[in-house]
Structures are given as structure tokens and as C-alpha cells.
Image 1 (cartoon, rainbow, N blue to C red):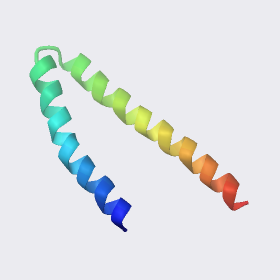
Image 2: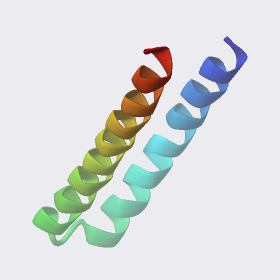
Image 3: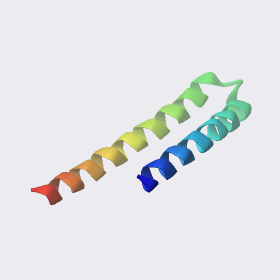
Image 4: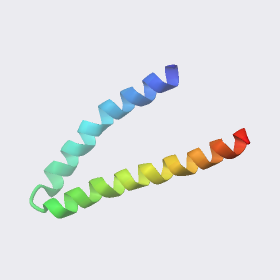
Length: 60
């Protein structure tokens, strides 16, 4: 439970910070800003799928 709370807290703290920095830097170029956000999301999804594959193979 401690790691879950820490991970959630870090996400809640870093998400708006990263979003604000991206908005300040790329507000004039919305496709680039949304492309960066989409790339971060896809990287997170790929990392989850990789972790899930490792976790599932250990269970079998």
C-alpha cells in the first residue's frame, strides 16, 4: 500500500507540473504539444504491457 500511495502521489504532483511546462513551451503549436503528451502515454502503456508480460510469466 505504501508504494501505491507513493506512486499515486508522484503522479498527482508531476502530472500538472509536466503539463504546465509543456503548455508554456508549446502552446503556439498544439499538434506538437499533444503529440508529446500522446508519446508519453504510449510509452507508459508499453511499459505496463512489458511489466505485465514479465509478471504473468512468473505466475505460470
